[in-house]
Image 1 (cartoon, rainbow, N blue to C red):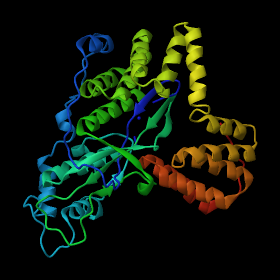
Image 2 (image 1 turned 120 degrees about the vertical axis):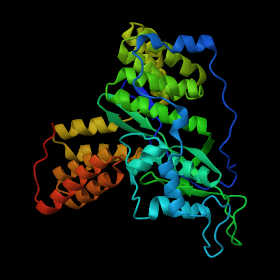
Image 3 (image 1 turned 90 degrees about the horizontal axis):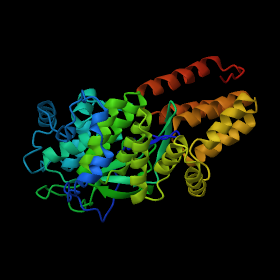
Image 4 (image 1 turned 90 degrees about the vertical axis):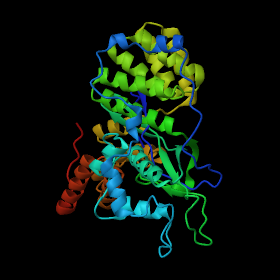
Length: 412
């Protein structure tokens, strides 16, 4: 759910899920956005600053069907391409597909947000974040002739930290429709079937906007850029962010990513140009506004930076991690009750971020509230988005259950 800011902000659009939207038009097609004007692209894209990319960046491969995937589909749903469902099976093709992908013991897919994979890579690894799993599902659906639509979910941004970068991850989901030729059971004509892979997702409360496949592919490429940037692979990140924006010029998050890459590369003036371009289209974009303020301060333009920071304070009076950072400071001071209250405020606005629950558990260790500690550690494990995180929290929870002895909390 996967949209970076830490005084530098790249938006890592990690996305997936699916919900029911009766007015949704189920189609994989949309009018392609125009390419950015040549002068605009020339001012924002600077290939001469980076060595050639070692990666094969091909939009056509992001949701490509492989022979191995096709064989899996043929073996699990023999009539997948026949245009009809067996009369003896009351379930429609959508349920058969989801059973084959997610309910059968042979595949055993796991949610893993550590790396954004293509559809084929997610299938081979039997794991992926929500964007990868949604793309994989869509790739199989297209092979079966099932209409589908990706949906971008509002109000489900999730902030996390990677080093000194803050990452804001969005959420995308997929809705599957019936094939027109498919046999239908009377009374079972629901407009779409929703699938959601994000832990803790509240499907019934989601508000969504359809997003076309071009946008989804651009999100994938922007995710790869953000992940590589978090690993300090700046040159590789550049080519992915560049590809994302050129593939879909409406993907302003990719320009924000590109701006952070320029800033990290030492090209502050180019970073400023990218952030200003975003703000010209979205004047209230807080990630680019924050990034631009930092770039201006770095260049000594303090007056304009201060204006932007004043505007930011109105738009976002309590930035992400504000209460968390105060809570950590309270922990270091030994004020566990204050820390607990501050962590609770952060959880109130980001209920499914694993690290907040882990620190809430630590605060309650200091308070001797062992039932709360167990509950919060269990939540930290449940809401983890990578397998190493899950294993870490599971081990801590097992250790706690084994010992169940109060211990002094040390915060380093």
